Image 1 (tube, rainbow, N blue to C red):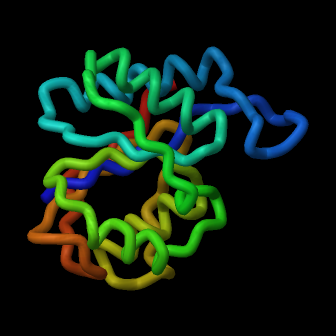
Image 2 (cartoon, rainbow, N blue to C red):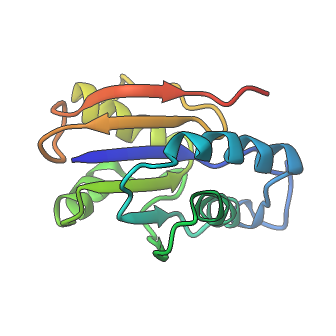
Length: 153
């Protein structure tokens, strides 16, 4: 099983609410560069946070890849989401190749939990960073970090 973790691209500093912040043009370019690393990968599903910047990031990835599937919005991938909720949800998924588009600090904590089994070992996820994890299944400390890419500014 492979899971790719993608943090959204750079977002505008302010909006009416945090959930409504949109990507900047620089953020869109970051996402396009990161999405290029997914070309040719056998993605089955893209899961995205309901926040606008994550939705925009997921749609850009979909465009770059020519991905015919839908982006599935899941409520448990916000900045302050609980890793335990994510683990429960992910353990019920049947896909072998998932892309999760979400936020810090959640994305770093989830990646660290999957790789090391320690919540304190968060992956360093800058905007539009892409982590590739691989393992037999979704379990704390049982996935391997295959790559961690940060887009060049």
